[in-house]
Length: 269
Length: 269
Image (tube, rainbow over all chains, first blue to last red):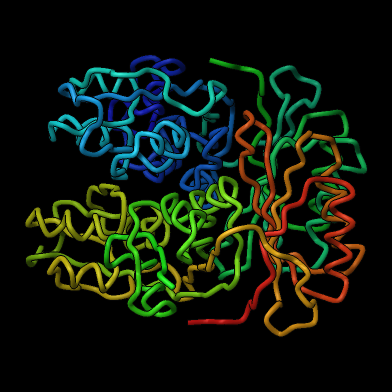
């Protein structure tokens, strides 16, 4: 089945898709288009959910809010950023092109360089900009540097060698549910909670359901409900245990819960 | 005192700074530079913290993690996005330039337009790109459209007329503390919690401190600790009550808490 993913060629999303989908890839201009393609049927999608340095990917979280797509797998991609330029730039380039998320992930190197920083729309755009303006440089991925003919001056300029992006595979339609809770293919679950009303103490009650059953939350991320400032929904990931089904049933009694999927949480690429 | 803010001219940050700082503004290339300027002394800063549609601003949260700057005020700016072009584009432009956050805030209009979407690094960059390529269009702010000579084709294309960005004023050094909890200048407090270790149930314990004292949390946002995937810190905003000081003292007994400031939460621009 075709696999929709954020392009252009040379993005980390593209690199991830090449590893898990093979060659049958549809490059999309935005993550929103990836979700729209998956929701309309006929393809699966690979989207970045969070990065260990830069945090959650808002467009992906919004994709889950706008469509009924569900998650069927997760993958971790170690992220390697490189300092690259088209021609020798001497000690300092006139400026450096970098995507804001990549800047967050390489802030030490970029800020120590002490040259003007120009934010771009993607790592591929950074490479393209540096290729077009001699004397400038870029922070980019190895594939994007290769595509735009940049020479890598210094490898691995990310702050942390533990820099990892978590991707998920999304498929059409709501999560069918009823997954066997003791299956090795089902180690982690994701849900989306929309409190609908801002009742004081509700978040405490929600987290308390997990605490009471000894279920470890691996992540909780708030996201605007889009109903106005101060109103949020929550994306929660938790470990699958023999009580996790009970926890979800209990949560559904107290608030609005959408199951996003249960999947293997172990695959590392 | 000079006021550092994200540029270029025509950004919403610039618009906000003009309203609250007057003319003595220093335009910075990134939000990280705003924090660095404030931390090194001699200026105050205005930074976007969250938007009611697009969520938290990661670079601002990271600025608090990297410096010891504190918050002294907050301001709300209604966000108005416009569809604009340099020359008449007929029924459809060949493509539309839009910043990813603005895309999130105008997704209905942009997606209904049905033309290729090109993401840019800022609303000002969107306006500039559309000005340079006849036949294309941009989603941008009124000031940026004016600076780049674009004509506004359709006003207010944001999804929600309640679209608001929350800005905070940041100042040098740690929050001095000891603020009188019954002052009208101190209605809301912000803290940064770094659990340091991922102890199961710790988040439940933290939120329970507020619940036990009847203190309303207005926001909780997780952010990577930068120590590796799955390790998070939490930005929490809560209402100032006569118990809020006790709550912070209690929290400090159970985890690492940094006070980011107490400030008036009522000013709307």
